[in-house]
Length: 249
Image (cartoon, rainbow, N blue to C red; front, side, top):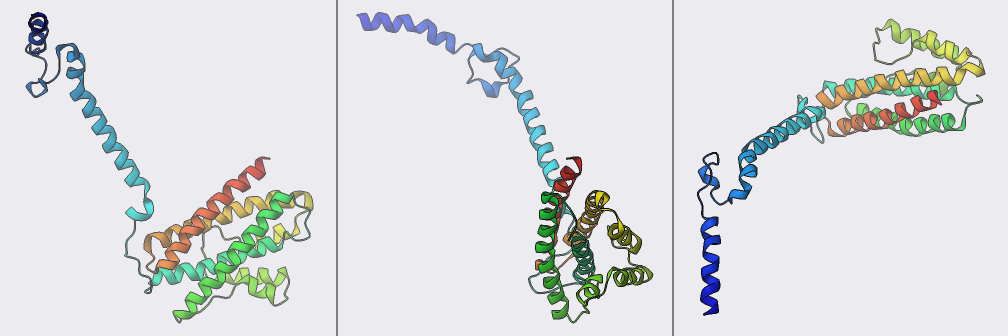
């Protein structure tokens, strides 16, 4: 008897649950209870906004992946193209000038952090030059003469300036590359001015290397060269940030 009364007492509540949804609610959502009507009405707009936001986010992500979306050729672990040859040829000369700038820091009274950065540049770019020279040799392409070849042969900066003049006469337009006058000015600068000038020039030099590396990422075919270009972008972007901090400090 008590069970029957309890059952009868629940019937009005069950009937209340099955009341028709308000007209503003779509019929495919009849599983919702009336007390959620506000949530139900706003749900389609919320989902639409979320969907739009997701689409925009995915679109922005795709646009940010420059390396993937702007590639014009498929990479190969063995085959190379003209872009690979140009990258290796030009970057050897570009790196060699950076190392010559590092050489100029020797015997200069620099902050320890600046000197450490200079040695990091030497440690990174020296082996990269050797790697790219090996590629050119394997491809039966000439390895370019650089101003560093003169330095290693025992010539002074005046001879290296002559080499820079020759490069300019040949129409060298590599981004970030310093001219002979720039190098002479850096070498002849007073100790009090050298560090700031060196950092400013190296930032410009790095920015040029990044531009060249991005071109290889877009058009190079030889996979190791494309990978090296990515390393140049990453490492030199980080070094630029460090140099700017050193200038501000």
